[in-house]
Length: 230
Image (cartoon, rainbow, N blue to C red; front, side, top):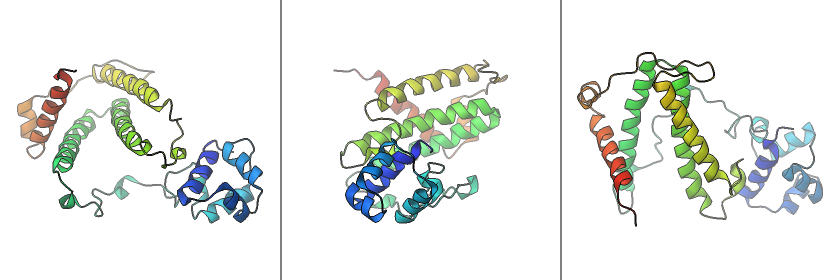
């Protein structure tokens, strides 16, 4: 059985807000057996996988950890939405800071990924993307985990070690990214032979709509880095 199954089976039950006893009765197994399934102590048969998927109204691919989409859909590049119409930027309560920072980050990413695409180096793209994904993962999980009512089963990395794990992997990807950008090779993957020439003037010329966002983001980041600590 795929190791993600026990975690996702537990997550689905907790998201629905039902007890293990109730879920076991409705899935037609004993509570002890369901407990073993959720803890990964015992493996279930295909019939139970299908029954559980139907019970929680998800796909078998999702409950087995093969896709993060509950419908089982595998998203393609052209299917990723540019904006979520459900998010109303003009209805924020109390502050424009979230909208401002969101735009600074998104606009800066337009520049970063365009530069990466022009570099045409798969290894560099992978490490740059991983670095950014780890940052998003860390921010989301910190906020998510602040409320103990949110089921930790959403994540496969244990709560007590996730921050140290993220920090370690973030440092590794940053080091690898810098090495590749400087022309070094990693595990047989070659780095950039001709790193891009970048200047504030060139950024302003190439990206007139987004340049100020990136420059302001850089300034804001360095202000935090250089700020005196108590």
